[in-house]
Image (tube, rainbow, N blue to C red; front, side, top):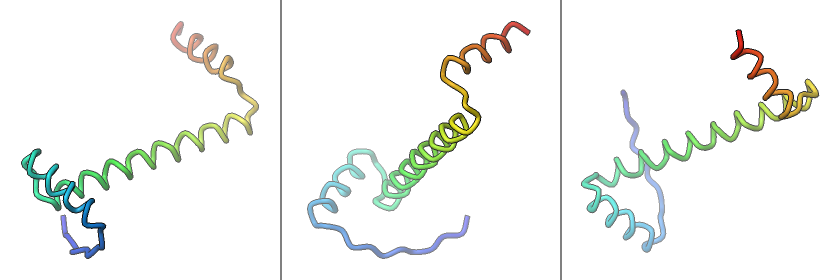
Length: 77
């Protein structure tokens, strides 16, 4: 994986916490921040998927009860 160096500005207190957590978890600051960013992006993608699903349900006029019936019927097959 190719990498690019990123420079960012952080409040001193946050940098102090990053150093402490990285030390306690035996990670470099870069690895800790990489993991934090990946976690944030993963949660963001999940929220986007949930919004898209809800939008699709509204457009298809499907309720939560309908989904339970669909799943139940599919499991019977």
